[in-house]
Length: 330
Image (cartoon, rainbow, N blue to C red; front, side, top):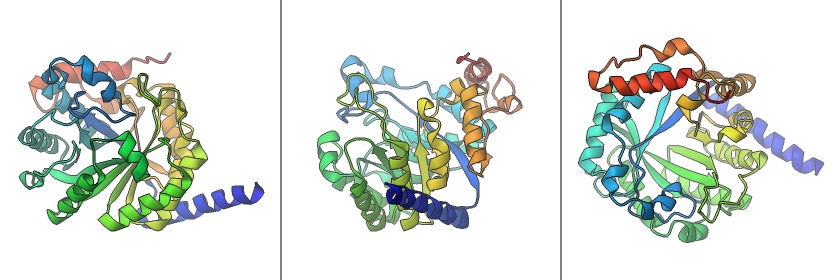
């Protein structure tokens, strides 16, 4: 057991050196901006939206208010959070609608956006409002993927990513750990990154949702998660790695940063802002020897309770600021 522990920590130590050498010491706060809670496929075994599909009578009513989406982007700009990607289930918005949303968000933030809006063959419709395309690979084992995500074929995802590269877009994949894969499956991830020239990997830990087959499963152990991230970092020193964890697992943050993460994600920004949990995120980054881009605690950065972009966003900005100032965890 002593030798195994030594191997793990040597791996993390080397991954940390590689990260600092190739990326420096800055850690970003990342936030996925959701467009809708509807997904036409709705059969990924781990996904919250799979539990909602049969409950939604009118998919259009599951869309978020567009002004609310833009207000969220404005708040991310104020707090210096990165928008991880725009995310929406299949058939929730048309390609033209997604393009318009992305264009307006780029105008708000000054930066192009990543998309995670499903498999599409309409990439030629997008332009410089899009920074990159994300393929929801999800499972670090292709056999498990077939069972867990039956409607999202890996070949289709791979073809989309290859086409994205042809159009000049960056390419990302998402991987959820804790779905039944093992440490050996990291080789599949490494091969996939190499074969499809992936620029960014986003890891999440399983969040067991009620009404799914994973409802009683546990989240992956922190050192298991760290080993996979470390191996990917050492195999690809230059790629960007984002790691997601949950409010009940904030202690993962420090070790994931040391293992190779450039950014951290999967937090309820406005609910956690200024709370002991938001402060904990910043402390985890600090004690990992990193500097944080963005804030989880600086109330001055929240700004005025009205939009600096458009009066149409005022009521949503006011709601976000007030929610951020109210400590819901007390």
